[in-house]
Image (cartoon, rainbow, N blue to C red; front, side, top):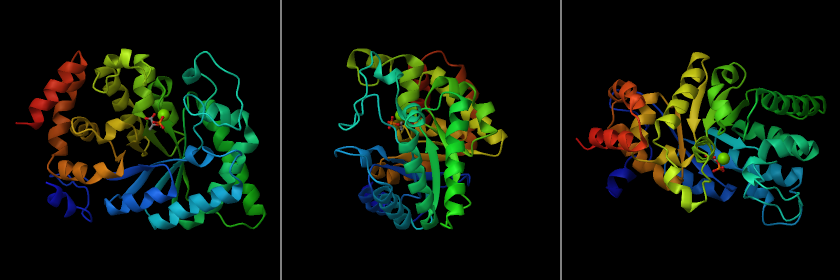
Length: 323
Ligand code: PEP
Ligand code: MG
């Protein structure tokens, strides 16, 4: 099996009926890119920039960030690279940023909420990203977007920094896509509205499942409620993908679900455009996708979405894929 996967390193990810999807990887540092390329990654679907801010005692400077982002973009050599702006708060803390204790950190001041409040810190990151953009195919996405206003505010700061750099005669790319993570149910429900303004969606199922099921993703005692295959989750995912396609945009997925063997056939049938997973899962997923027919999977979607429980969905898909 492993040797079959190795032959697929430079192959395209195309279904048996000729539909191409993009297989990308999630990374945390520039060093991770080597593994992505070794495993035949076509893209980076999620660069979690928070690691640049963690394990140190002050904010990374614009220059340090520019170096890190440029390094990733150069190594990717023109392949799509989705960089997520700082997603701190919740479980991820910074020693040099003393934030007031919150009763419910996962529902508190984190990610884009914190960035919009700490505007200077956010502008520094955006400047570093904009300057690095000339070194590759950069796409930027904002985490934990709950309302359209948050996206508009973040996008405005991005455009302001872009204009400033241009006025300073600093070169920036003119083709940077700006998208959002869909990991809060309100945003998944309102995807048709967002789709008119964003360039792309990336579904963060780790948080989307947690918030939809109201089940802490770290709490074992409620892990039975953490259900990727619950029809509620699948219906939200469908809503997001359909909304993006109506506006000619694309949807990726960067939560754990994107690399799940049982989820992949469903996601293919739903029309997901990009799958982003740990680098070590890419070749296995490519091998699986090349044996699947997109049109066949599409033909099962109405039935799958009309099932009542997570167990029913799992049994249905298992029967499909082992026959
Ligand atoms: C997610 O929420 O699915 C995601 C990819 O982001 P993180 O796991 O970093 O919260
Ligand atoms: Mg998340």
